[in-house]
Image (cartoon, rainbow, N blue to C red):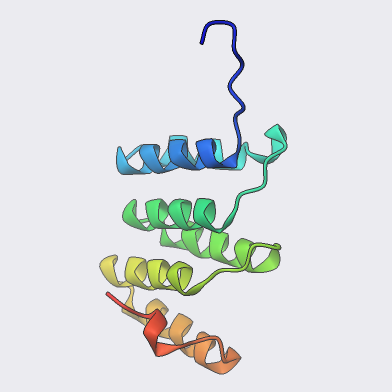
Amino acid sequence: MEGKKLDVNIVIYTILIEGLCIAGKIESARVLFRGLSSKGLQPNARTYNIMIKGLCIGGLTCEAEKLLTEMEEKVCSPDGYSYNIIIQGFINNNETDRAMELIQQMVERGSLRMHQLQN
């Protein structure tokens, strides 16, 4: 392996971001996430979902919601799992009103399917 160059791609960065979030190093994960574009990498749905979950676990639901909005505006659309993560994040952080608002918005847009909201 000596002298070989590792092809670092979004999958590797996603794994690193997930590891940082699991270790409780949310700020480091956030810095790494925000630096992806400078490395010519575009976060995918999994990368966004991991970062959103990490932010929610860290109690940073406002920032998680901003990431969800960013995800909606980019090519990488949120899926049921994305919404489930943030709704659970709101509930776990005693922000049930915000969870209900998001669910209501999803109903109004026709983007809510009840099977998407699971434990």
